[in-house]
Figure (cartoon, rainbow, N blue to C red):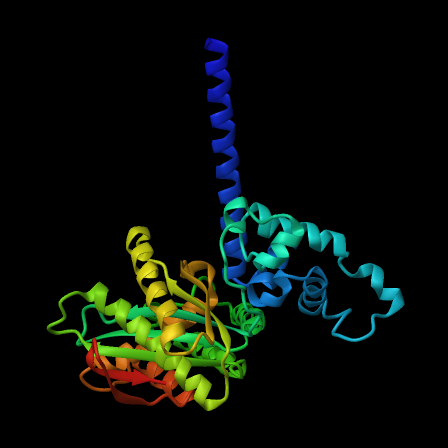
Length: 364
């Protein structure tokens, strides 16, 4: 009996250790995607699966997109030079990495039909009529908040309308940082007279790589709010809905689309509740407002320390907060940067009214 008990304990410990190892690997992969700095094969395959939903169902599609993204010096589409073929990542390596990401880590899963064909659909899932994951183009939203102590409470966001360009934008920012000797993260609160020129140089790089990005912001007067956290969730929701309508009507990002929403991480418990509420409301809006033409793909909190794109969102929302919450313009480095940021992207603000929020200020 004692031997059996010891065996059970050992099995439990082994299972727990395996689960911890799997979770650590999952977080490592997600961090590489968030930072748009995938270096390992599995990280790169996961990056492709995240930004190209069509690759989740097809290893050939995944391989071609992998080549075009990470081996573009050899393959950019079309015929493959015979002498270069052996330098390209092999299909069986990509397939193995894709299986690890989808089956072992449970990320970016294929559609139920394909998983059934691959034999990875669980018994429980086989009994359910699961929705088919659409392979629409993806746009990524990186959101942050500001003004908890100012007159206006604000949320702001960077939208990458062609999600695969997140890699290009991140690479350009990192290269510029290296050129100008900028170390660490970009944070509005760190701007001062000693580094403002470096921040303006980085702003120039963002502008140079802005063909597929846009910015959205939404604010409300803080006085009289019953709950700041509840109001922030509502602001995030309305900012996304309003932004989708704007981009669809403008023709820049026509529906249908897959949507990925990431918010700067704060506190785990609070973030979890906020993400659940925002996801629930967005899923309802997908049907009620957009006739199912917005597929809610990813809703999560993300650490800005590993995401230059989340840091850009911080620069934006802090800039609009600085402008709305200041009493008058000045030549302070933060004011100068905020004014240049908004003028560089032609940002204007207008009054908005929403059922739950009364009068708001919208930036776009």
